[in-house]
Length: 154
Image (cartoon, rainbow, N blue to C red; front, side, top):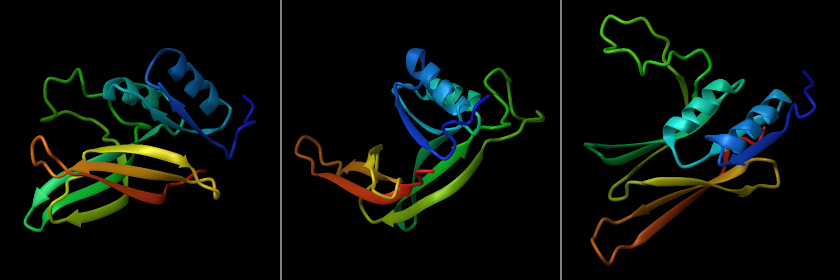
């Protein structure tokens, strides 16, 4: 298969199913690194797992002694076991996904709840926009944090 898109990065919206998943597969087959966006986690995971070098960005949120902690990981599904059909992981043999920490911050009162890729940057990377609110009911303050170059464009 040709690697006409080797070294290029493609962002596929609606990449979890249908035409978007088919386009993602074609782009990856041509050598592009593919980032998927979509609405359904399970569909995105299934599409990413089927792509060569398939990976997702995962925002992890946790509360601890120092306040709210946010971590951003790149998760690689290549070689990972689909454990959905296993009744239990106890005693089972499986290969977990691999994850690489890209960013970590601890905030006293802000727990980022959503993420979106921003426009491509001039160096080929992307910005990542994290979204949060202050949790104060009907009249909330919204927060956005923009990480420039958080996602490698290669």
